[in-house]
Length: 180
Image 1 (cartoon, helix red, strand yellow):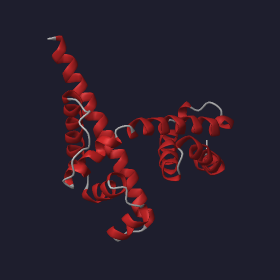
Image 2 (cartoon, one colour):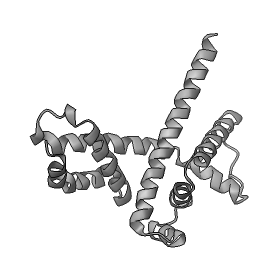
Image 3 (spheres, one colour):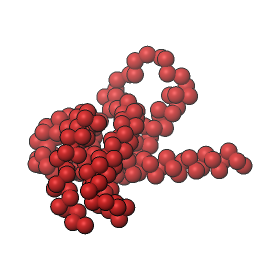
Image 4 (cartoon, one colour):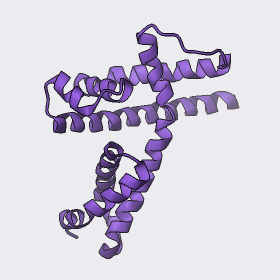
């Protein structure tokens, strides 16, 4: 199968589908790139080349849903920015258990961010934590918008991978600790 030809033939249609599923251009672009990578690595699972578009769209939808689930963690990720700026979290409706959980998540994010390459960390912090526009991030760092997008994508993938790995390790520890 000629993967490049299939991608060129179907990527625009799948991108439009991802726009509808993800709700915005930046997520749709990230999802399409990740879906293409997954499709390339699992091309042997595609039985009918005529089904490539729907297969790629299915992969993209799963990636987008995973992204949406991770976005549920965004308030936790933004907690570090709030604390760095010396602001207080409004309200006292968060109980001690929830507060402890949020603190653990913040510590996890801090560890993960400290472990990724500085050029990726800078883009990730500005774009995803501080919500600076992509154009402004590129300008501040003196890089092209394409380079900023590439670094952001790589940073997101690395942050997700490392958070997932840490969560799996901690779940394994909690399970083994509860059985003993």
